[in-house]
Each structure stands twice: as C-alpha cells, then as structure tokens.
Amino acid sequence: MIDRHRLSTRLWHWLSALAVIVLLMSGLMISNAHPRLYWGEYGANFDAPWLELPNFPGWITIPSTYDLAGARRWHLFFAWVFGLSLFLYLLWSLVNGHLRRDVVPGARELAPSHLWQDIKDHARLRFPTGEAAARYNILQKLSYGGVLLVLLPLLLLTGLAMSPAMGAAWPWLNELFAGRQSARSIHFICASLIGLFIIVHVVMVVLAGPINEMRSMITGRYRLPDGPVEPQEPAHAD
Image (cartoon, rainbow, N blue to C red):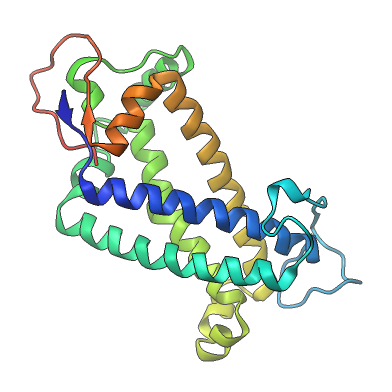
C-alpha cells in the first residue's frame, strides 16, 4: 500500500467532478434554447449554422424542464466554483511540483516507440504493475495535461467571452476568439471533449480495478498491483 493522492488532489477531484457534471447538464439546457452554432461575431435564427444540435431530453439537463433562466443560474454559479478551484489547484500544483514531476512528460516518454508501446498496452488492457503503477504513464500525462492546461482554461476563457458584461469590460476576449459566436462554438467543442474524457476515464477506472482506484481517490491509499519492482522510487501521482 502506498500514499498515491494528496488531500488537495482528492478534494479538487470530487469538487470539480460535481461542478463539471452540473455545468454539462445545465449547458445542455442552455443549448436547447438555441441549438445552433456559428462562427464569427454574429449568429441569429436566420443565419446558417455550421452545426445544428438535437434537443436534449430532460433526464440529462438541469433543470429537467425547459427553463433557460434557471439553467443560466446553475451554470454561472458552478462556473465560478469550478474556475476558482481550478486556479487554486493549478497554483498549488506549481508550488508542490506536481505538474513538473507527474504531468509534464520526459523526452524518453515522447519517443515514438515508447508512445506506440503504451498505445498497444492500453488497447490490450495491459495495465502497469509494481511501482510503475504508482506513476502516470505517457498517455495519462498527455490526456491529463491536455485537459488541465488546455481544455479547461480554454473552456473558462470562452465562457467569459460569451458574457456581455465581461466582453464590455475586456474587449480583447471577443477579439481573441474572433467573435462571441466563435467563442460559443469553441466552448461547445471543449465541453464535448471533456465529456468524452470523463467517459474514457470512468471506463479505464472500472477496467483497472474500481475498488482500488476509488479508494486511492477517497483515502489516498493505493495497493500496487503485483508485478516486478522497478529500481526507480515511485513518484506521488497526485
């Protein structure tokens, strides 16, 4: 048994999980109000969208019945919860070295042969054993790093760019994304990718051993799978 996840990581994980679920579900209700996406500054009922979304059923939206104002209140509140917690978590991860030590990949890990081997191992459901299981593999580093450092900040910035108040206070936000409707489209793409990441993440947790994985994210304690012991000292995979 090892200490795998710090308390700060566990708290942020569950808080962000709650916030993201509410944000996705309330976002689908907001989408139902105008289920068309555009590029550029303008977008209205008679403009040609690049994507027309379906009407999402009530069991997957917040609120469950059509209520645009209510959905916006849910969305705005949890957006602030998520944004502030993400900022504090990233700041603390810089201070304690988590990003540098556990998320940023090394040059050897980025070698094509190493990447391909990791892809084949995942496809065959061959999970790391021994002390290797205490560290993130290269696919985990790339996916977690992409979500933490690219998708989530982009999601927050595009959310701010869609706000008329923020757009008036910070005009560069609209310019950054070439218009509010472009920001809305990018926001939807990022949210969809995060939803896909959550599905893959949950599937991998189940396949890797849900009891062990859940215990490590609740108590911090993780039982290393049986396997050869490597000479390297296991890093904190928080």
